[in-house]
Length: 188
Image (cartoon, rainbow, N blue to C red; front, top):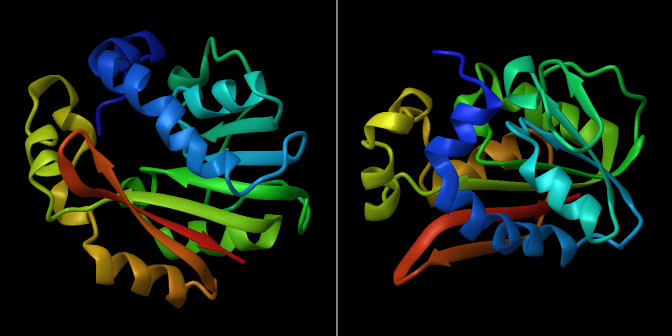
């Protein structure tokens, strides 16, 4: 996968960041107490960590691509989500938004999230959704999207359960007039 800079990534996704960051962050804030400590696994540019920090959380952005994290206005750490330097239950919550389909070993990432936090919140795009399929063909962002690595509803639930996590709540998130664009698993 081609490595791009934070500036390029934000430029490519511009409208989607402005539209989706508050909406996706609401799913996190609905399940985490303000002031709690969180980690965003596969944070990319760190926009969710920045947003949540601005509304009263203490979130660290973790990504293995230093170029994406450079310039983020939050605490950052460069490493893989498969093996982190954190203690068991160091965080109140961990989150992964549109991350698993980019991972070589998504099960290892989910297991690590379970190890380092008391609550795990994961969101993934629905590979069967027309909007997701269209989005993955856009030239500027195509380098980051491989539909074969995405999940449908059952595949997503299965990989979360296979990791040893219990799904406490499961949501479908709509975007505009498209239903079931994303799936959310809130886990313990």
